Image (tube, rainbow, N blue to C red; front, top):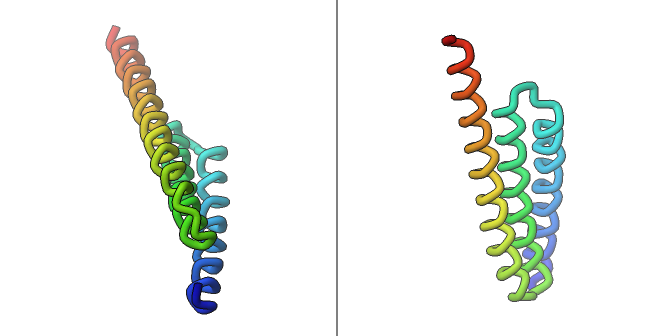
Length: 98
């Protein structure tokens, strides 16, 4: 692998880790539940991108399979969290109307 590509990929990986730090803060701090769900979704997306960059950096094609599976699991987790959030919000609105 060309040295400039290797350095570029390492820089990209560093930027992704930096962004993951802020997404983790958003997932922990919130302040609303929707912000936490967004932070979790962003963590999943950035982790997927990081695994893909590592697959290219280490020239390991099996990591792309791991990346795809992780992406699907992350998407499913965010969908479940969003459905829970929506159902609790609707239940809260019904209670407020009574």
